[in-house]
Length: 125
Image (cartoon, rainbow, N blue to C red; front, side, top):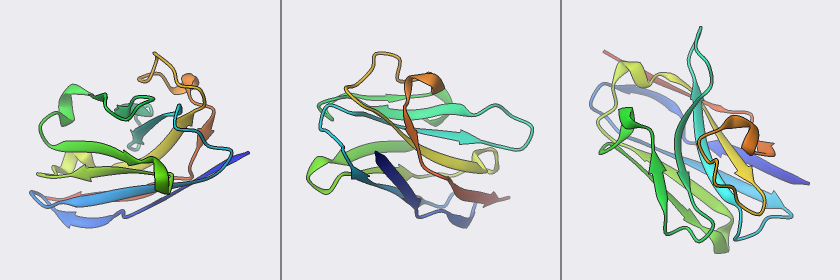
């Protein structure tokens, strides 16, 4: 069993920054693919970013490229999402997810076995 707990969400003004953290416990592995998704009201849960099995590969949806940075610290079983230059359209509940043993489909929801309960990010205009 793997438990994921997100933290770091909150209310910020447009142009501001937040860093989200996702702490994992249980039977985690360095081979896990870790990802971030987000869901705004009336929208599908969409892929935001992911980091590969080794942590050296990072992937982003086009709308956040150049603004968001994903990283992981396997020793701490923690993945981070640094969000800069935030825009009102970034407002959503952000979810951390883990895919044990990794996956090439890091941008697909069903590739992930474990999910956190989400943290709210609200960006005011």
